[in-house]
Image (cartoon, rainbow, N blue to C red; front, top):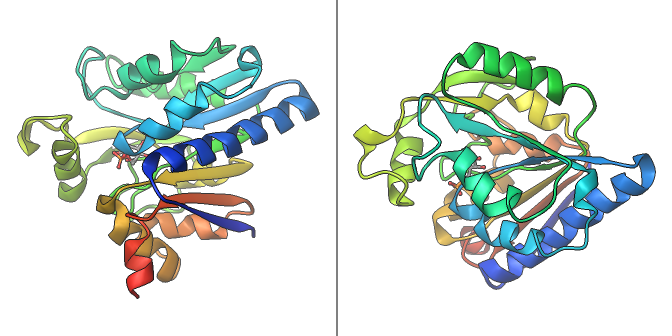
Length: 246
Ligand SMILES: N[C@@H]1[C@@H](O)[C@H](O)[C@@H](COP(=O)(O)O)O[C@@H]1O
């Protein structure tokens, strides 16, 4: 078990530190095996990290990118679509070898099966795994399922998670947020060789405090990350504020 916590003053500083750490791990993997496989999160908390990551020196043509989670039946043209998010904020900005998305439209079971086959061809080197305001990782809301062995599954989103999406401006009201999503499962996330978490902003202060101070338990899904052999957590003064208050 190896946990590193890095506290920055601002989200921008956090983004550049997290991006440098991700780039180093990707470059180490390329050196060792000639390629690297990356899983990316989405959400407002990842903006600064992705903006900095696309500027890093990485042989992007040796990188395969996978996607963590997506709403069921939300068109890719919707502003909240995570496929749209990743295409605009990452895939269009670096010349990747390949990008594999979670597609929540059409035959979802078939989409999951095809993506799982691709994902499981080789281990994932770096998982960039955000933490939600309710402590979720991907769309594994509390109480999270730590046991499922499939790569992805369909979940029903909890109320707090759906409200957070409205708070971030992705939807006009809670009724407009899809009730279901496809998420990478916790065990699959934990199988990433290295995990990097970027969690800035005061809205994450409670989740960060719970993750660090509470025992590993499904009621705070992100606590499982503390059992990973190599987890680097990047927070800022705002998201760390409850830690210092304790
Ligand atoms: N489903 C996404 C995840 O991919 C992300 O890691 C996490 C944190 O994102 P946010 O910045 O929206 O809090 O939750 C979101 O809902």
